[in-house]
Length: 274
Image (tube, rainbow, N blue to C red; front, side, top):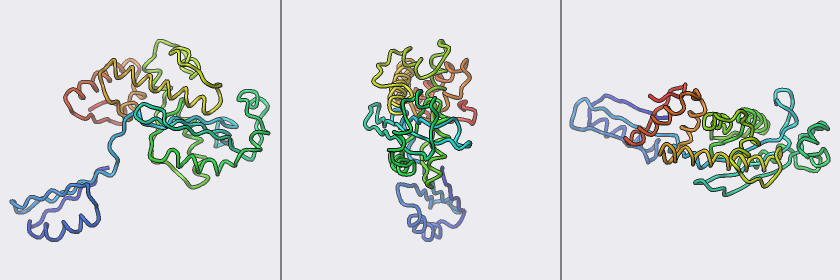
């Protein structure tokens, strides 16, 4: 957010009165632009509250295993797995079963390999999610079918009055734009399509988050190489996920043209550049 304070007044009074006030309230780095040659004078204070635009290769990729499909129906998280990517490299991992205080179905036990006995021995959700809130703090987030994971992250953190500062991007939606030639964009199908080595079991949180992280980095690399856009911003990937599939090529070409001209691109709510 950019906060602008505009004051029209006599130059000497503006400098004398407002400059110390602004510096005391809004600490540098910030810009106070004073023009003492004109009367009246325009005093403008710009403060960029948001951190610099973050790149898409520095994120936390996460995956939940849950007792059901909707936290609004009383379903809870039963496992969280996540990997932290910094500058395109996996630097840290987080994995933990958690006890939701309810039993899961025999179907889910067979589907995930997570049993009620395992959950009974796990720490409670509140304890795990408090640690996970620290793990994701200050990072943007990626998940495959992100709307699902976001609902559970929001619900579980709301229970302990915690939140997170980053925003979500969906690797599944991006993959539909990058790989329109395949019919099903499930994580397993994409892993096989791209020949990503598997080092775990699907439908366990850490394994799924690691596979999603590898897929995410492959997509970033392929987009960057094909369209000569480097680095790729997280905002660009979010907006790419919202594009009509037939408009993806033109969208990325526009981003390349903007990058070539050295002009940061602005986005409208529908994801089109302007």
